[in-house]
Length: 240
Image (cartoon, rainbow, N blue to C red):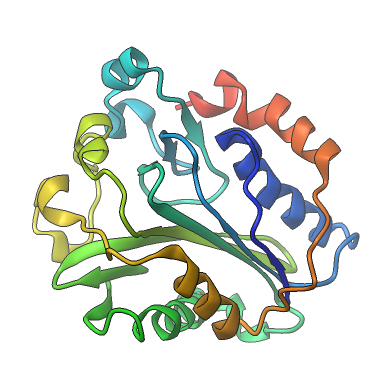
């Protein structure tokens, strides 16, 4: 597995990079699995592929603050990302891991890898809901996936030391939620792990057996095209 610890300048480019790698793998232009880690340098909102923006995002607040709202290619509900939030993604091959064609197995594989990386640093971490990591009932990591014919993109957030007031400021209460949330507002539902990024990144590379010296290329032309067609375009981000 190759390893990338590279953050691109804008949220749109960072989202586009993962889809570009997925497309390249599906087209047979890339054959190696990838673990990617990146860290936001600014605040932005990301909604799920099927989300309705007005149901999940406080649009007057994001517009007043100049906060971009982007739509990812995977499912799930809206998130706020900001400095102090570690973002990860794994690009996984069905040929190498045929069991991942079962969604239950896909969730189990990735959640167990995340648990093995984080639990040595925070022993109270557990898995709840479909694919949430929690500490004493409070969510510290949310995750989502996109399945293609031969490849799987699984990605998510890990809250380390983010300003969590941003979540209440920019998100509405979600229209769907895991049972363990019990209708709690964001301020009572999410929490930070209060961990430094470096040891967690080291543990993630070990959990996935990623080769830190095997760095995948950055497909700049594809990223630019995806930003133009999707992630930088209101026709994509505000389609629902």
